[in-house]
Image (tube, rainbow, N blue to C red):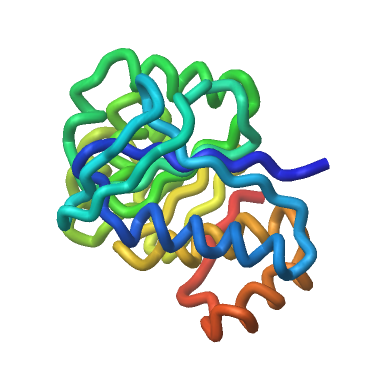
Length: 193
């Protein structure tokens, strides 16, 4: 059975936060993993304009319970101010979806209450805000707390996705992705026991 991954796209999303994980999951298929990745928008299919102006056509609307993993990239505050998105994030996690935040995307998860009292991380410039909002900020590149996985820094989305491939598809698939991408996972993964 394929690992179903959704990447939540929205106007202002940071390009690397979204495309880094997308590349990892795509290369995981080439490395023998069974992964199905879909870019999704909160409301409906359509175009988004990213942080640096890149325009991306997003083919699907986000169905919060229709994935195994949801990636929430950083880059903008609009999702933090969208009560429907915040409710849907909670609904997704309650339905068994692993919710993963990249960089400041973790602050969106915090606004939904998903990081409260839980180990997590984010971009180094936002760690104080995350802690003030109730997150237990860990000093690690990737923090895996079961159904909540977070990563700190713009390029950390690559490491988060490689960790999720290791966790869900096995180390051999992750090593295959590293070989294809000529990239080695960076930094520590903190994992709850």
